[in-house]
Image (cartoon, rainbow, N blue to C red):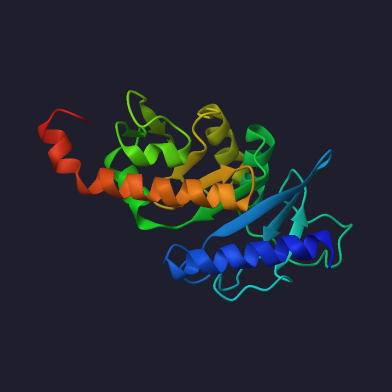
Length: 210
């Protein structure tokens, strides 16, 4: 099995997991893993497929522009429309994998806190790579759009190496890590943290916390 097929198998397995959680409804969401750095080569899930039914074949290799490269078994495959943002995140952050899902909690959180969602003094922050206490974590929020270059610029403007996530307003969330497993663990913890923040919003406001 080729490196690309192995990546496709891993992406399919993770996609099925997130689809089972209801975070990749219909054909929404996309995942990627970096296969090369010089030049940048990223394996991304294909466009328009049910993410709970992907196979090792449902993957396409893209370059830094998010477009399919010619040197691969099936260069005619169509990558996710958001492959360009995956590539930008991988290039800027140095991540080995990027996960984009449409979990509800991050999108609702961005509605309440469009300038960034603040988190602190929660044990689950350790699973996101931050301290459980006395560490203010702000998850950036950027406006949605269909131009991945514009989204990439907005992501890069607010990028912090210690905060491996960005919420796209009224769309979904991107989380990244060293590999798919690492990114998945971060996403699972962050989804819990954002759900907590949303569900305790009124209590927080009563205490004077934005």
